[in-house]
Amino acid sequence: MSGNSYPTLYSFRRCPYAMRARLALYISNRTCTLREIVLRDKPEEMLAASPKGTVPVLVLPDGQVIEQSLDIMLWTLEQDDPANWLSPPEGSKDDMLNLIERMEAEFKPHLDRYKYATRYEDADPFQHRQLAESFIQVLNERLSTSPYLFGERATLADFAIAPFIRQFANADRNWFDDAPYRFVQTWLGEFVESDMFLAIMNKYKPWRPDDKLIQTVIANS
Image 1 (cartoon, rainbow, N blue to C red):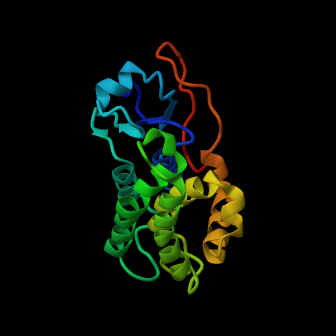
Image 2: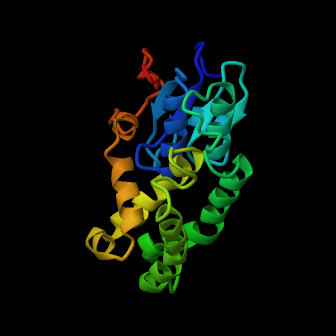
């Protein structure tokens, strides 16, 4: 249980999955208790709620647990979507979900083996960077005709995908800045410099079970 009238979000600041959950909670004005965790010392309360042991995890006041970042985004936006993230100017919600799924299936495995090559046996980071570039090229082509992935306004797809492109870019910033992906670079630059991204990237002390006060709340207010 969350222990108060707000949902409780277990999060890790630098995790791209947790980032996109926080972005959706922020834009939907969802007040929730934020519990920043340390990945090497996960709190028992989080593991009891979600034995998978990864962030984000959202525990609702009634005890319901939402364990996947995209499900958290959809849950909060389906209740309150003031920026119309679920209604893209071009395409449909299903089109956005398909692009997000494509990112997770085709791009994320290569991103991991590029950025964290030492964790994978015989992983060649440069080969995996080249394979990951196929998806970057898809995004660059889309962004060559509109400022955002589905038209003239940022939507669910932009905010669900951008944290992972940020991670890719930061693996070798000099290389990325010189790469021939001008439209992706512009799009990502706007994302990381936005007030919303800066707001959800505030630093907090790791949560401890004996903390007496709500550590912080996420809300766009």
